[in-house]
Image (cartoon, rainbow, N blue to C red; front, side):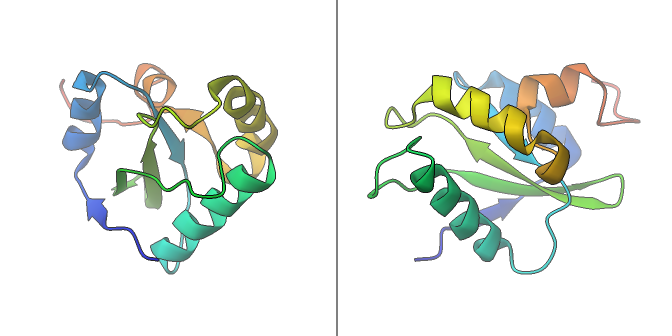
Length: 114
């Protein structure tokens, strides 16, 4: 099943901070983005972070520093955030995984005066 992946600007990425939940960013996603969403969701299921029936409510794509990135909303109560936090650390080097708040606060988005 394909989820709608909305393409947004870097300014809109910064605006995601206004949501009442966090996002997980994967950096450097090439090719078919639905394959990335499906593969990442499968990884989360295999790690026991989400249930077998889980799917993301919102996924955004954006280009920054010549990379296509995905932002996964973490507003779903089915996500075991503790397990996800540990898993995020494991995949940091290979998938560039980081929380949206870290991505913005550590100035990964340049040249936007917000």
